[in-house]
Amino acid sequence: MTDATDLAARAGDRDPRVGLRAVSALRRLLEQLEAVQVRSARNQGWSWQEIAAELGVSRQAVHKKYGRQ
Amino acid sequence: MFERFTQAARAVVKGAVEHAERDGTKTVTKEHLLLALLDRQDTRAAAALRTLCPPDRRPSLTAALATARRRAGLSRADTQALADLGIDVGAIVDRVEEAHGTGALAGDRKDPGWWSGRQTFSREAKTVLEKSLRVALARKDREIGDEHILLALTMTGGVVAEALADHGVTYTAVDTLVTGPKAQVIPGG
Image 1 (cartoon, rainbow over the protein chains, first blue to last red):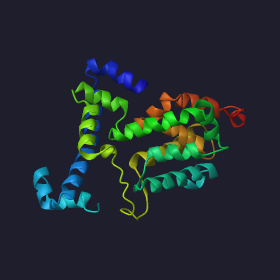
Image 2: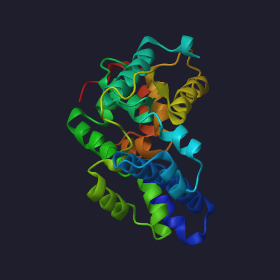
Image 3: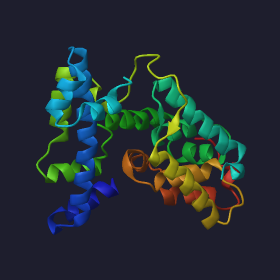
Image 4: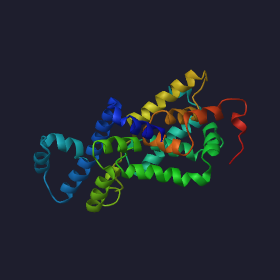
């Protein structure tokens, strides 16, 4: 609670802590979103190559990250 | 480090692994450590938790953890920081759950058998265990008990510390309860 109100109070001060926290939170959200979308694509029969192309990464990268699932 | 853990502290570590197993996830998180702490009876951490967050408030505590899990594990402070950027986490969660089902962003896999290997501790959970050692040293305690794990959890931020603080379990409150001669004879709530 204190953490949240503290951050809210500092938001207007351009406190780097708020900005950095947002980046870190966004990264976490992005990771979860990616996992959801990759799983969904696999369930719909997409190949790793197709998924990788959409994500703009190599097939190996996406397979290494999600291949076990 | 683990040789300095008391039986109670070892039981918490083991309990956390079991909670992760039950969840069907390969990673033991801070949340699993807290759930294992809540399972304990007759330990210093259990006594402090019973006083600060009596059994009737436990459902509210576990519900707070579940809600945060659905929000991709983001704390309220995280959500607020994103709101300042114009990103509405609640709206994103709603949209994704609409398309992919409730708990889609929770990141845990329920399908049994997808993982059969050993559990590993998340980086954050490891930090908590390391911090429990430092807490014990700072308090000049010779052993690491489950109360040190609880203290470490309250000071590492994120969803678990936030949910604990919302239920009255802060570092200061726990510290006051476990310090002093009456630490072990706190009456049950």
